[in-house]
Each structure stands twice: as C-alpha cells, then as structure tokens.
Amino acid sequence: MLVLARRLNESIMIGDNIEVVVIDIKGDQVKLGIRAPKRVTVHRKEIYEEIRKENIAAMDSTFKPEELNELTEFFKKGKDEQENK
Image (cartoon, rainbow, N blue to C red; front, side):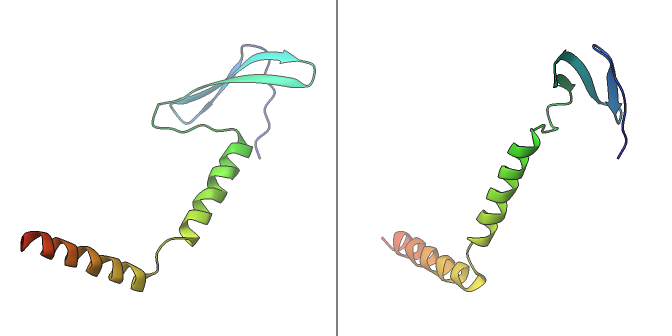
C-alpha cells in the first residue's frame, strides 16, 4: 500500500486521468474530491461491496443451461405459432 501525506487543496494522480484532491479536513474526517472520466465508476467501498454482493447473488440465480434450452424452445414454439396465423 502506498501511503501519502497531503494537505488541504493538494492532490494525487492515479494514472493519467484520475485526480484525488483534499477538499476539506474537519477533526477526523477528510473530504476528497475525485476528478475522473465519466467511464470510470467511483463508489465508496461499502457501496462497492454491496454492488459486488448483489452481482454475485444475481449470477447464482441465473438460469442453468438446460433451463435456457427449455426457454428457447418455448419462445421458438410461440414464434412459430404466430407465423402460422
């Protein structure tokens, strides 16, 4: 882990296009500003962990291959019936 000391209004760069600026310091709380391209998502760690858990849960509840085959056949049957009308 890289540890850096920064004062108010000082910043660090991550790569060429992400800047983290110290905006405010009050007691034991530090406010940071982050400048990053829109394509880069930025989350507090606790939010990131929740998103990660939800994504893992969603993957666990996805269809199994045999269920997808049944679903494909169901839709094919419905499409064939619509075409024959």
